[in-house]
Image (cartoon, rainbow over all chains, first blue to last red; front, side):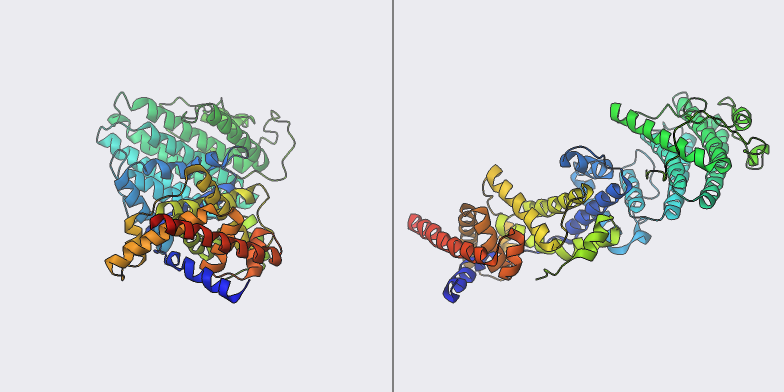
Amino acid sequence: MTKAEDEFGKHILSPLKSVPPIDPQVAAQEKARYLLLGEEIRQGIVPESGSEGMLQEHGTMKAFRGVHRFPLLRGLVALLIALIVIFGSSLTVYAAQGSLPGESLYPLKSISEDVRLSLTRSPRARLELTLEYSQRRVGEISQMLAMKKNVPAKVSKRLLDELESALQIAAQMDDRQMINALEEIKGQAENQGKTFNGLIPHLTEQNEPTIVRLQERLREQVKLSAFGASDPQKFRIEIRERQNRRMEMHKSNPNAIDKTSTPNVGFTTPIPTEIGNKQDRTPEQPTQAPDSEDDNPGKGNPDPGNGNNKPEPSRTPKP
Amino acid sequence: MRNTPDKAIIERAKRFEAQALEEIFDSYSPGIYRYAFRLLGDPELARECMAETFSRFLNALKRNGGPDNYLQAYLYRIAHNWITDHYRGRGLPAMPLDSVILADSSDEPGHIVADQMSSRQLREALALLTPDQRQVVTLKYLEEWENEAIAKVLNKPVGAVKSLQHRALASLRRILGRQEENNE
């Protein structure tokens, strides 16, 4: 290469030198997508097999792309993500946090929750966020019931997912942390059950099956939390099995609501009889109070069951 | 121009540490975007190329692949492959007028049109080069990389890079000369 050639190359290509800067919102949006994909891979949410196209469409990414079909929402989402990325989680409450399902800003609320959760790494912080969000769902459902509005299936599904997610996060912790976390989960589930009980007079015919289903699931949450506190190892196996079942079900019907995890149906590992019997109530009965007699569910039952003979995994897979 | 060994950050990226992934994006995404824009002339395509580059990078890490060293070279290779596939699949894009005005809004209107024509012709000419030639001249004369760094992107010795530069410039002269003749 001669100097003259170099000069020619620089000169001839110089019109292409100038590049308009990328829109900061666009850059922030792409950064958020990239970080979300990284986080999803880290957590093992993105499936092992499948094309890159499938990978991109998975999980939260899919939610983003769905929103992008609507130009107005796209702009708002871009702005929101930019704010989240630039200013951090303190501004994730910036937009739409008071909206209810069915309102135009509600998708932003959901997305901001997804983004914040995806960017949160420590199990403890993730659990706190998950519990906070599930409490939000209960609040939204309560408000909708009070206004005699129908509760959309997506919202009840989101609550069910959050309940499940709380258990999965707890299962990743060491025994001591997990027992504390499960106590917290149990207490919240009991309170949420009481909230729904108080709403029974407001139930419309259409909402009744949804609320009954949620009450059942909250009772199951209490039962599973108590079980986990009494036998952490079997609890982890149970949670892993539930996760596998959910993944199988999701493969066959991605939009299905998980109906296999109701009490007495979904437990792979038999729950100690003492706990199971005491909490086998009809859907109409109230969820047990935190100070009920089941506070020490494993007591007096050293052999909670032998239904699962699989070897103990060295580590519970990440959700 | 960074092309130092990046083993430490790559190791962290392989564990999908969010901070490492963020550092990588912040360091390299502006350059990848510029590189793509210069060759494609369209902000939307440049954005797509940038997004796809980082998405492919993550998916490569997920498959226990990705770079062991020289992260920047690896990322530019992905971007280059995406652009080459784009050329093959869709042909050369036209440059939107808005982008040209944004690119150099201080110019007189007459110069903007001239630059637009020139940029378009140049992109068409670059598209006619072989992928390796195109990458070499772009990295050398637009991104101002050293030959050693370009050699790492292409996985070729420096001598081969110089040879590609020489042939690429000769081809560009011929192509642009023909374009000029056709315009006259």
